[in-house]
Length: 121
Image (cartoon, rainbow, N blue to C red):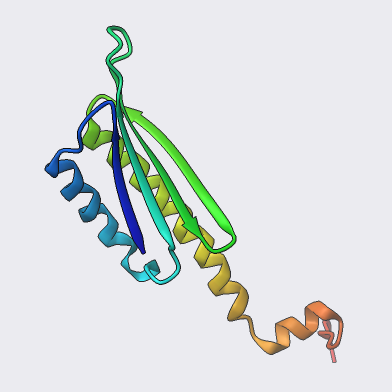
């Protein structure tokens, strides 16, 4: 898994980088399936909209996940975006796991090869 961390209109501070790697430890079990993660950290210098934002682009086979979250501080923005990323990746691969571990009998019933008898014998 490749991890790229960039700052737009700001320099990436070491504590932000450490915090990102700390949050990525929750995705260790999916490390083989995630191809690339890009973090774009942006600071808005507008006097009314001084929010920090974190944009994550995750490339997994056959899919690209894009997440953009804003917050008052950069650490809060990283946390919010990371939570959404964790949830999306877990749901994506939970479905794959469940799809491949169905029993043969239930697959045959779905195909119409075998039918269940209901009612009294």
